[in-house]
Image (cartoon, rainbow, N blue to C red; front, side, top):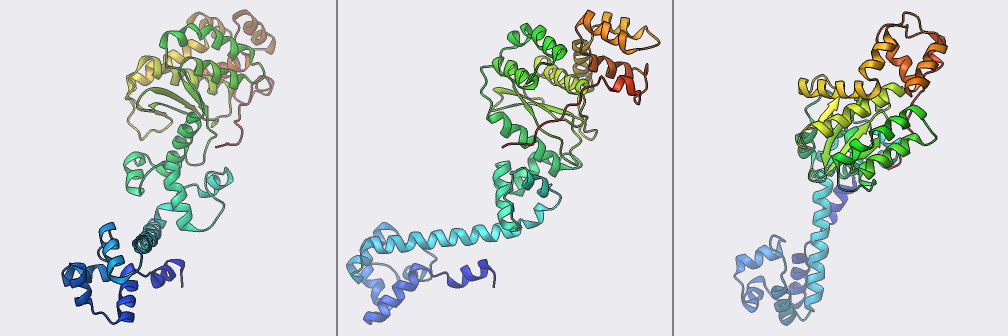
Length: 356
């Protein structure tokens, strides 16, 4: 027998106690109805648990049966609590199929779900994770992609991370004023550079979060406004684990905040989502300019050979990180991706395990 079956079997409504009481004192339901001032059908509903014991009814039962009103009200409250628990268990049982295709093991590993095989408990935790009342509401929010389960988990993680970041009111002018500081951070790569970038963004009103890549969620980054469109959120993944990819994604998402509407939602890397091509190009162009100006790009790409010494000289001259220069050269087809001497310069970016 399951817990749900046991609860149903043991469930007893307050009407059972009323019936036991009148049986004990030798009173019929018809007489009780008359003494309470209720019709027999109405009393029958009360006995069968189809009608609740109200304060008025509890008081009348105290007068007629000699048992305090508080007893009847507590009995009713406990019954409703048990009834609610049964209905909740039935609902969670009905939702078990919904669990399929979610990265449950990954979520358990990262502490996002309890380490249990109890499926109803996992369903309940998943609903709370997404802050939705049922799989129907989850579906209305997330089922516009090929792998909605994994993608929805990744996006929701970003929102949870953003809730922990204190930001001021968004100031577009201020973030533009700090472009030079951000580019210097990109060039110098000091210790805790990711934390420093987060701090700069938060001081300008932007929540920047780093969400590790999740299997079946092929996303590079995402941008949307949360908290009733009052707080811009930039969410970056470590999918490519590359310094150049990180910064290009950051500047690309930043462009969406600076150039486009609050109601827009941008998720990079999902071909099935119909993104606005013009806005995506604007974001790409902005990111490219932030990494290398047209003058810098032309000077860098006019070479036919790229010894390490040349890259380091260019890096110092224009204050561009060597890792980004190598990636740009390779993307342009000026050097092979398997060039060992150049790859030694490249920086790997990998986020820490999630802590929610």
